[in-house]
Length: 126
Length: 474
Image (tube, rainbow over all chains, first blue to last red; front, side):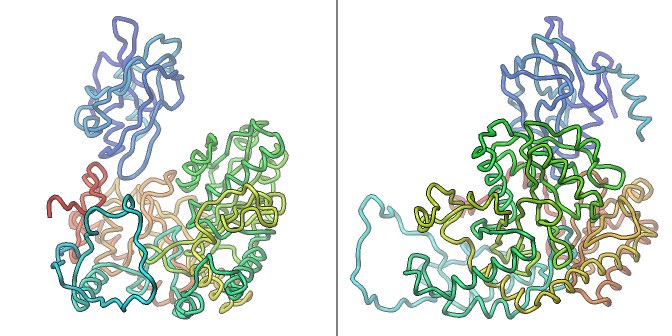
């Protein structure tokens, strides 16, 4: 399982990148894509939608199951990675490149872990 | 294997239509086809061989054990088919005068009486075509009831996390939002979570009992009372009705509306042999909102009723279910239910020392769920590998990876129509596969080894589905 030092992580397996302009980019971790298996469908919000920390922002579907993706921060969806709608496998191939959404007007956040803390959290669960 | 379209040769045929004995009427030009319908053209021999070949590649209840959990793949008695083939039932039309189809009306009335008795409900509709359609119908009844009472804010449907995926999907389709509540350590409804989730916005609860891990919820009366106290209604998902029919009634458990899967519990064919039938029965308070057919609309106070399917639903399926009920009688229905529960327990006890049972208790109802999480960790052999290996032993795989709250789940529902010998054989095969997983698990990753179709690429099929025949490539 890979993690990146410059990202923060949630216990529900999303990664967060805090951008210089105050926006936040959200994606699914390598661990999450491994556990989910091959993804076949991604359901994302629309730009302009409000999102709330800890609430589902959308869902991803593998051949096994549909799983909610929880939003690590509260704010407004600035941008959606529409490339994923036709190519959900990008999340499996490059989880830290295949971002889901960018959030602006960020007003609050879930508990976020560092890469080391996230790795310890995963190790604890196994 | 070639598709029937690929076997087609122009001009070859097997049907000689009789001469037309009524005046011919042409459709208006704008409704006429611009090119001929591309139906396959084959001789009767070719058609017969084509479908026989397809049947040989499939596994149905007539081929072998079929313990697909939550699907109730019981034997479909031949007498039901014989009744449904009677010309008096097949040669009719829903628009012919009602006094010429009194026998059909009697079938519906009889089925209504028995099913209302079995569920503890007051009225029924046969329109829904299958289970999820029944859920949708039942939810619309609940919505109509709340709106008729001026309760426009009851928008939330409470559903346990162990529920069938169709429950939340139907609730959203019917315009509700879904509140998911966690299961407790027994796989049952967490009463505290339920109490915390009800309020003035509660439209109702959707529940299967026994639930998807095969356990009858001992708090059922308290559960339905909590919802009623909050002003909501209780929906009983009849998916697992085979576990209680003739013994306990949803109406007595506090439910207000229930759908039944006639194609499961009442032994009519499904899984490719359908169609299904998902009648919805309800208490008298919901009866004024039951759907009506367009031909009834405006009669007998049915103005403005919903219509969810043409006319009276899948009538011949109702007829088969009625035949099943008449064949078994009240005592037989109860015996079938008890047999289903006994068979599931027999099988569970034959396996539980090697495969851990999820939410294990001493007993299950009509089905049980094994978790292969430990086996996968130790041997690398997954629930999928075991399920695929069963195919090599002429056993249909059980339901896999469901319910979602159990990891590496295999869900078995043997049904009452299997003999002790069949169960013993299936238990022996499962134990043999456990041994194989421990000793030579690698081989199981590639199972089935003897089936015509090995492991279809499910990911490719989901990502790039081909949903109809592509003429362009022909």
